[in-house]
Amino acid sequence: MAKSRKETMEENRARLLRAARIAFADKGFADASMDDFTAAAGLTRGALYHSFGDKRGLFAAVVNQIDGEMAARAKTSGARAGSGWDALLSEGAAYIEMALDPEVQRIVLRDGPAVLGDPSMWPSQSACLAETLRTVERLVGAGVLKPVDTEAAARLLSGAALNAALWVAAADSPEARLPKALEAFRLLASGLLAEPRASGRG
Amino acid sequence: MAKSRKETMEENRARLLRAARIAFADKGFADASMDDFTAAAGLTRGALYHSFGDKRGLFAAVVNQIDGEMAARAKTSGARAGSGWDALLSEGAAYIEMALDPEVQRIVLRDGPAVLGDPSMWPSQSACLAETLRTVERLVGAGVLKPVDTEAAARLLSGAALNAALWVAAADSPEARLPKALEAFRLLASGLLAEPRASGRG
DNA sequence: GGATTGACATACGGAGCGTATGTCATAGGT
DNA sequence: ACCTATGACATACGCTCCGTATGTCAATCC
Image 1 (cartoon, rainbow over the protein chains, first blue to last red):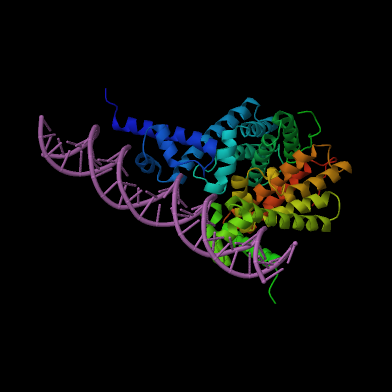
Image 2: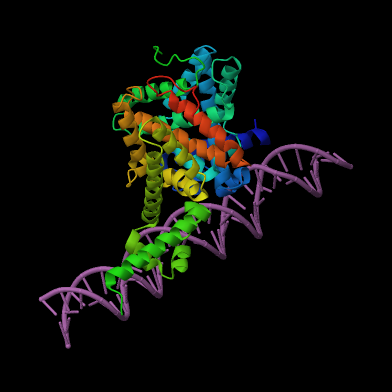
């Protein structure tokens, strides 16, 4: 049977998104060509500009997709670790490990801010950031963390985590740096604890 | 008298650098045109490509210049605050305040990583990062900080500081966010302290 | 003082983005 | 069932801009 108009449209959109995601991750925003996407998706520029407006719009859609996936992973990782201090640590560790993915690095961490501006201003509002913020708010409310400004704390924590990931990924042997980065992150985060337990074992 | 060949060359280089720095800060890397620079400097494409190789080379030179200035400022700010824990805090605060400069934000924080890759891989090796690293090494050696991996700690601290700055700068009223960011940074950093004194007044 | 070097100008090719225009299938009205 | 209209998508074009290849002229060196 013939597919409905809506179906084919969404399918084409998804194909363009997939192709763009691969090309953006592989070549970066600047060096990825619109013609590459369309060729890979078996479509033409018309479809692309019709669905996404321009190159930035397409890129924003890709970023939004990845950001959502990351937030979901962080959330489940945090939830698996409980609901207290360990949840925050686990979320941070999840960010660091996710950011080791070259796709995440290139699209979300490197090109994202340059093309779309500060993550807190993204259309997706950065689901990652929002997730961390919720966790921090919960822990401050429960008295686990000092009464710090929650937005600031969330922002610094995720910033530290993502920078840790970039540092790890830039190494010749990332696996050697990963535990160092995790430990440093744990120490930093422990500065937010209401009652010190940083020297205890994680 | 006629200027020597070397003099005019360095002068032209400096003029191109100035023009590029302004345009990169104003329009960003992608939207700043080589022809704009040369027009502003009263030269042509020939001079530019002869001196800097390509657009990335020119951008790297601008980044290097700003990075050096930032490191110098952080160093003096830290030194003015003593040689211990307060020096580290002061350096961090200096980063945060410097990163409020739109020029720094756009060139160093946003476009820099996208165009040149991870800061630790920059030609300048990121003088900022190196400065923080030295301070952390000193403090770990003196027993002020826990025996953390110095590179990791330096990287996370500067990452947190710079993210704090981006967060502050993205606000409608940055001056309201600045103290919150500084306090959150102080708390995070205090997690590295060998003996807890975070709850004491800064 | 002539040759050579090298800093810089000029002209060109090629790539890529965005838009304007065209086409055709599908959905809806009668 | 046919006709119309909407809109998803294709095609063609212009424009900008980067990088390079070639040319030129002044300064330095022998």
